[in-house]
Image 1: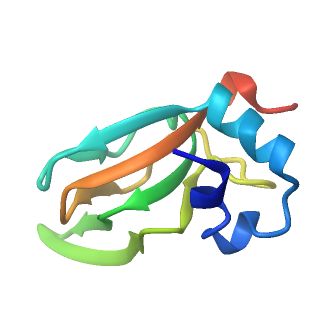
Image 2: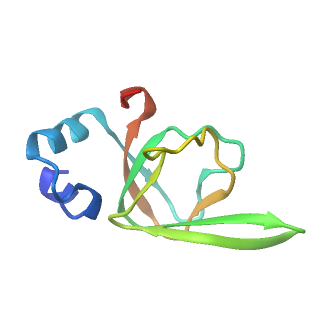
Length: 111
């Protein structure tokens, strides 16, 4: 992965290259096959996730029925976000396709 890969994210397009390199150096690349869960309700959110490729479907179960919330695709960001008080997942997040993401662990975030 290079800083050029991260410039494809709208959220990172104006970030200076040294800061993008810091993100790469301190982040962890994770790969999930289609059908694998990234989170289930109650799971602790591990950090900020930069989706490099693939699609994650977020959904909830209500009255026994699957209720789609949103899909997150390549070059989008999810997980712990600025101003979020979320500690744990409130939905299922399942990979619709093979998926790769760069995760910045929450212990690397400024408090």
